[in-house]
Length: 179
Image: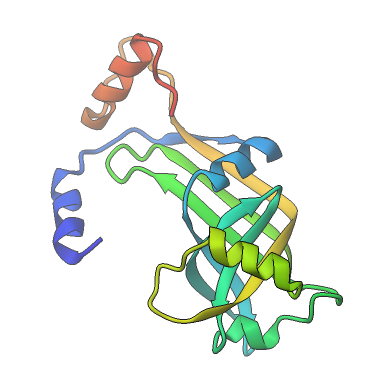
């Protein structure tokens, strides 16, 4: 989103009622994570947290991302046969106008993929978004999966409603209010 797009969103933003957070079961959280192409990889660099936006795919429950040879993670991730590097991965889809959507955070162990056939398979399936040579493949095996959905609070009869909730209320009234 560029500066002009952000400004337009801010100008159109209407006040909305506070949202409720509903916990998601593991399988639903992973399904949602697999439904979007971009997430954020969180790792430690020089004893400080670092975050990189990356595109990904899900292979079973594993999150797979590609790395360039100069990537920090390529140099600090242990070889495939050793204990992995603890990382977090986050993806979401939250509407900036309605404040409805979901977020998923996975914590697990990341390992470089070394098997040439698997590397080739992931190179075919996962195209980088940046113009760099991507030779490394990182697989994150989820240990802890947490997810939540932001939903509109049920309307209270006679209570004033925020302007931005009018559309949500109309959808809910028709029975199609699933986010």
